[in-house]
Image: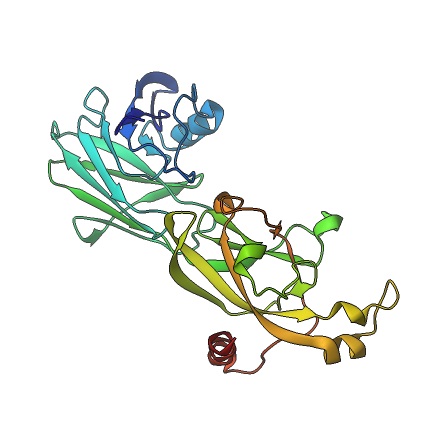
Length: 295
């Protein structure tokens, strides 16, 4: 694979409600374990991009975040943009303006729905922005050397499906930034059957940097419970019985895109909610760390 490939057009220009041009993006190809954009895809979802650019009043819109050089000199922005980031491992995205024609233009920056709090600066100062449709718009006279820095809160969280999705009621998903995580059996203690593990709604999610499938990645560790299968002598079991047969177990979640790369395994994304908690009280994080260290 070449060191640089043409990827999806991720910048689109709309002026006066009409499509005025397309900007090609040149960036790194995705790694061997996946991730990034897929070379050869004919075009992105233009209706979604068009809605975004229309709401931004004719600004260029940054839709994806990856290391790249984008030539926008033939557009109203009139500059080349260098993007540096290791998103989604961290939430910092830096965009440097090069070869600018020194003219005023709008630039839209996409803010993901999960980023409830974010920081956006231009040359180290908070940027005056207008929010619309999941984007913020910066309108200014751009000069070579201007640096836009976006900081998104990339950290693990628990999410759940809408109650109308009855098959998923009572389960959680571990997410971190834009990524969905999963439990793969290869990463769990040998006796941690993934059909018998649960996590509590107030579970403490811890981060660690590790090699997964040949890629440096952020894994999420959480203290769960595993119940001995002998609790079910019938298709049901009493909570009092489960309490005596449940024990804490350290669980390790990896990005979903990386599973099934290390040999035969089982996996689950939707993790049942535990009715019992492996730790409780105000010192839950310290207790969780202690149990996982000793396990």
